Length: 161
Image (cartoon, rainbow, N blue to C red; front, side, top):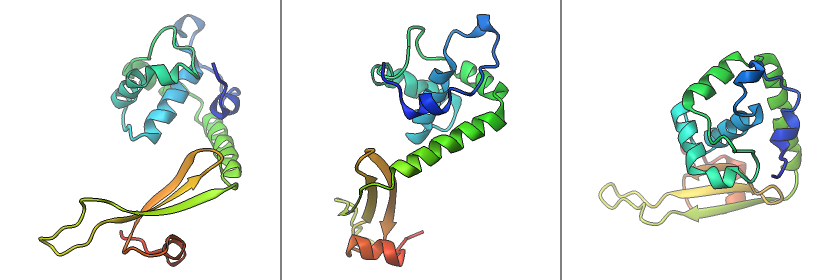
């Protein structure tokens, strides 16, 4: 099992559950929830679904002996966490990621195939991606108004909203 920055930054967060109610380690719930939300999950049911779908990948980082927690377990545990300490842990983790992201950043523009709309006479969608190479972390992705130099698009904030 590989320890991650999430493990390190959330060690100080106390698990408020009774000892006999700790079927799943607290770090499992936090790690799965973070990963699921980053991948688009919006509720406890979809977080549980994410965990089940990514079980093999998650098992590289977590002790999943007891499987993936239910959506009710996620709900109960997150409802009783000390939010002040949780926010402190989260901010520490986010600052750590921001510090790591100061390294090499790649900016890449792409035109998406099959997005040209001939009926409305609209060209294809152009998108700019920003990627932190060292962390293998996507820092952002934005649709821009036209195909141009990626740096120019970022500097001019050619953002289509």
